[in-house]
Length: 332
Image (cartoon, rainbow, N blue to C red; front, side):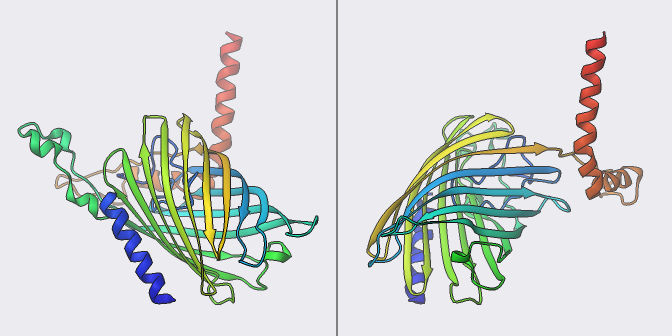
């Protein structure tokens, strides 16, 4: 079974790669929704991002039972404190289940996971717009785009969940996150996860997502996910759209076809992602050779400004300053 899992995973990666940013902080929100995959990039220091999704799930259980009908809220919080490459995140999922062959319901937390990811390698690309001597070189494909940016993920599944989903102890989750920006309009994200390690419910999964930027505000995605649990395989194929309302606010919708264990189902979701952007650009002082100078007034200022509590208090002091400015304008 493990050999088949590895073969299928490698095949899917190869196929999508054939068809298939500098820095962590971006001027506009960069949400993982509406897909199930996760980008290797963090949101950037001083950014507090919330990704919420309402969902309806008619999911296959096994060949001997009807589907389990569920609906609920998936909540993801992302931020970065210490480094542009390091992100801390928390995922909470509340779910209400309708038991097959019964009018009974169960409701409560299905997932409560705390995790972190770190960018190990970030691929950089040539700026072809500066090439003015050769049209062919300016429009040639950059082979570096075949080499993905890489991050690792480590998380902990807590036991603060509904009795139906409780596994009686804490369990770790690890992952490997890849992203290929094949063009400015098209990228592929590949995730591999090993979840609930050391329990009877441990699972291996992979998800591959292709995202296309249709315009400055519209984007669409196509996704395949496969999960292996207790020698059984469950898959889904998904697609959807995201619309950027402004640089800090995005709405999205998605649908999925679920299949596995001789059963079929579907998933539908609609969500909103928004962020509180308190990111501050750092200034670096260089010597005559271009090397960064240490322990200068600028470096000490950057260090002081990036302390956790200073960034936290700035969230409130900036709002207070805005109110003072508006009050002065009204008095004039």
